[in-house]
Length: 167
Image: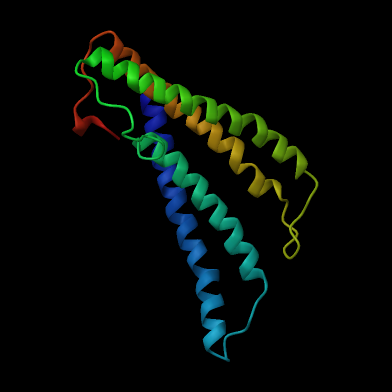
């Protein structure tokens, strides 16, 4: 399962890189159109930029959960033993699981809401944007499952893997 999650993680990193590259094109065109008269002022650039921006945010959130950089805050003290550390991390990850389930449940309702809607300019199905929420929630669930397994190992008194073993 870890190899499959590693592969998915690499795919997400490629997707966010591609989304950022695509996002740069319409935004650059919009900026250049403001300052140079010879650059046409296309209206579609706004819509494509918006689509890409939503996906960049959601892909970044997915990646950050795997990296442990999105919702992890140092509010709770670090445990003095692996068991206490495991309990603290399990508490934090349980809260994140609740948020992930909310994203899946209400995200799917969001998809159903936009099922037959299209964008104004390109007439792209709005589902292409709205699906980002449940996909993000499902991805968080997968990555958090891996983290909860680590937390349970800590609760049992086992040490965490070395930093070099991280994805």
